[in-house]
Image (cartoon, rainbow, N blue to C red):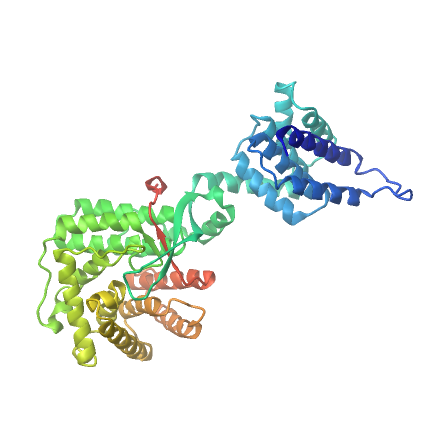
Length: 502
């Protein structure tokens, strides 16, 4: 269909819809074979939808067609379609209160018929007054709009004003948008964990997701400069679970500013580990650019540090924080096919192989002196780096490592849940290992339900808002979101928009 035929057809459909609007309250005699108003509206709807399959690349024509679709849905009293289209048109208008083109004028007037909000009719009126050469169908549409009586307090008007307010808020706030087609794997680990790419976009791109995010926010969990490092760590992790980019980045940047002013290396290590946590190294949403920034800070400040080594029973007890940092620094990135070989990464792999060999050869005996929390942490370090890497590409050893980790993790799990007062740190470490070993919550629902009951019961014994209470609250928030989504994949955001930080 060439453009001239398309425009002529669009004019005809607009005129037909206006005629229906003009005569919709009049009685129609169908005894002589004429169509009823309902039949006429349905026939028009089919023709308008058919026009929607053609895109000639004209924004005004597209707006006119969107206007026709909304008017047609109104005539058929199709509430679901009306609601969907009004949201799409509000996105198109982006908080405007007056039209600047013919297409926007059509949209404003169609929104008036759908909502009876007089503001939309006023916008169309002003445009026509300022543009006496406006199309005839636009002027006729306004004439029909003038005949509609509205009440400012009507439910329809209140609802659309709430929607307008929501859209205005969404325009100014950020959300994560997940692409179902952009997938990658952590191919350097043996788990082959699937990741999906997500981006930070304005909430107006998906108002329903913004509405969900807004509903899950609790002001007491908003990151603030007065929060201590560990609280910021938890709040950033909770923001990641809720898919809240603004609060996640707020926590990260507060930690980053604190790292820049810290002079004590031990304090810097604690802050950097918290930054890694907020960047998603232990969570379901990895902020790749933030993780790379943390890597740069690690290399600059700790790249030449001689981390503890020696007898196995002394290693973790000497400096557990250093191992958590190294695990974050040298974990393989999703989609990467090369493991970066440096002095630090080679030394780290050697330490992991030593731990895995002791676990395998001594049936876990050399690990018995460690706490449950530390044991789970070592399991997590090996799993996150990849058994095949730790085994130096020896597939037989990698399988043996994996089987032993599965067995000992289950033994530790049974010890943990049978304890009267399990340590919160152990529950946190166990949860992260469980997420690595059993990422499909639906398939392992009974195991997760059992564990989360223990977490909730233990939390109830702690002082509300204490650090340990908040650590368990982070687990509960993460599980609640994952159990709602029922996703088996993780997410990776490659380029977070720093403007999202406020």
